[in-house]
Image (cartoon, rainbow, N blue to C red; front, side, top):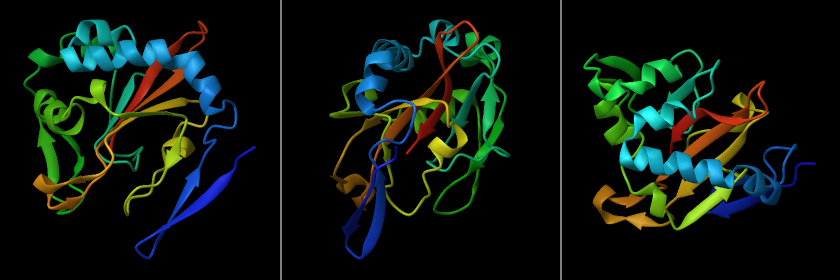
Length: 192
């Protein structure tokens, strides 16, 4: 059962779905995935892509999304094998477009990672939200539509950042799905 509340802030209405994934409540999701999520966020923090590659879905790989709106046509999917030595890869990829300017995001994985994956110490985020579906800002959060069988873990820094001239919602969402071996693997990394 989905329960949706509407939050009204400064003339904007934001839907908040407290139980984004109907299969698991936030409490159940936390119980299932907290250890795997912690291992994943620490691999990202340490840039330990060899270990991280073992946490990536063996068939689906992991989709990298620079902003909260997942784009199946543009977002890059990398396999576990590709991620093993990704930090040595100097190839420029097209990762999508900048939200504000629509300029192309074309860069190496290392540059993308610095700006659109681990641009803050998300391992120390003050809020960790399991299976939440919180709409922040003007971009449509479609994570739960794209990954209906997934469990999401959002690492979130609430508030205002003067360095960005106003309100921002720095967040990193890691999406996990169960594979045929009944283990949960990373299938999506969405920067918010």
